[in-house]
Length: 230
Image (tube, rainbow, N blue to C red):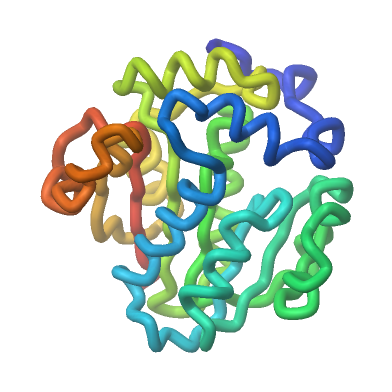
């Protein structure tokens, strides 16, 4: 996983119509579906923001809107906006979700946000452009706004194997959590927390109640970094 040129980038338009099926197949070893992982992220934001949060949230790199849909359910008072450069992905967002959320493929249409969510996007961004992207997102944050980044954890061997075998992760270069923290700091953001998440497959779902207490343990399948704008 050492690709880092623009030519290596995956064209997500190719996968938009069957993204959900491909993703479900790729994560089948977990015993869960793409909806489970989207819901996991939404619930993380609920714990962070509170169920009554009524600010503006931008889902950057939203794809076909899996996480956006969960946010619309769990944070009904939030004002949601979603961006993805893949026009085919946006075209495959469910019509009922489009009636509730503003989706766009032109970043100039995106307004200031109180929270920007970047869910498993950065590993698709070539190394020289990662800091530029975080800087760009920081500029869209309102004062005291928060940037929430979810990424695959390269310290987890099952995650590494899943990414290696995933057709739309051909361009992936995974980030250590320290790199993500450094990118936030490089954009002038204050890092508030770094949590390791997703520890147990469905077969061990009875242990999932322990996951919040394990957030310090760097072997979770994914991690979250939360940073704020001064």
